[in-house]
Amino acid sequence: MSNNSTNEQLQQQLSAAQETIKVLSKRMRQLEISDTQSPFQKQLQSYQQRIAEKSDALEKARIWSELIIQSSMDAIVRVDPNGAIQSWNPMAERIFGYSEFEVFGKLV
Image (cartoon, rainbow, N blue to C red; front, top):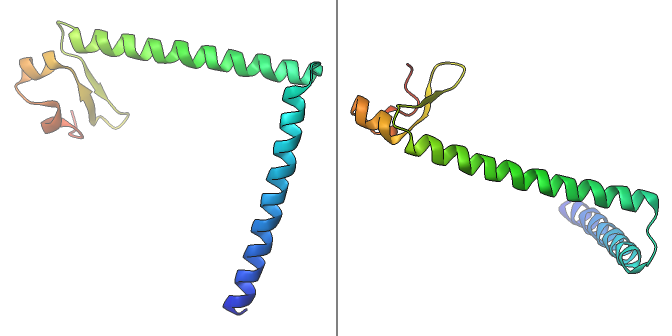
């Protein structure tokens, strides 16, 4: 197959994809403008809201746990299933005398 033929096919596929995107975008705008939502749309919107809320709660929990680990008065070392160090907190640096950078990936 020649480069021109391949380029023409790719251009046709791109044009078709762009046309599909235009049609779908137009349909989405129509659905957003509509005063009444179908039960499916309401359910989908509810799922999207719950996912956003759970994602926000998960991020807050992650930040909270990181703050606890970083300020702990105990050495906290996280290892992967193979026993390689993935992280350790400032107290572990103080107790063991090595920075996290020096021990990352080392086996315990």
